[in-house]
Length: 81
Image (cartoon, rainbow, N blue to C red; front, side, top):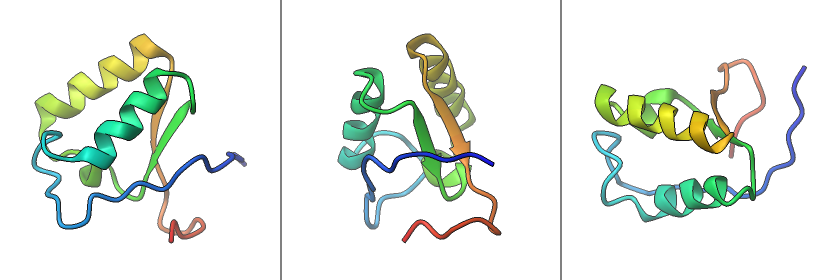
């Protein structure tokens, strides 16, 4: 079982997962991950992070380079809200 300390909850209300652009909460969260403030981006579903395969691949490469991970929660786990 995994246990994490919740650092922040970020929601770009009304923003589409079509692109990483124009999502200030996600941008702030990614910058915090890059700065070492957290080591896991936990998403309800991966398509909520990005539905673009190119954006998601770039995000995975960024996470790998910077030493953090992207994890989606199974629907049977604890709710995020």
